[in-house]
Image (cartoon, rainbow, N blue to C red):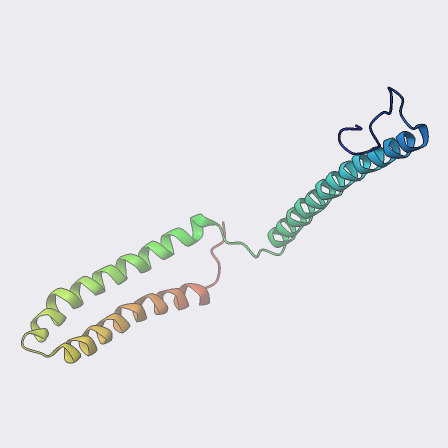
Length: 136
């Protein structure tokens, strides 16, 4: 500990008693503060985990969560409808009308098609959100 600087090195094989005792106490205080700071950090992590657990339990009690089993089919239906709409737009409506147009005209028609396809998703989500929850 003398080499670590807690107290002076021995002079002719003897340590200065007062300096050595003061150095030992300083060393012990530092070790204790390290231990306490680790303990405090652990207590903070535990408190945070407990708070998050209670928040999750409260959200469940308030019915703020929706089961994947009830959301999955609705989202799948919306997605399939959106895909069908996109495919129809690209293959049947958009492709034939783009021939011979300038880049700006093509962009505007593409943007309109994208908006139309996204509207399908918005309407599907709105319909699902406004419908009463399914009873299980």
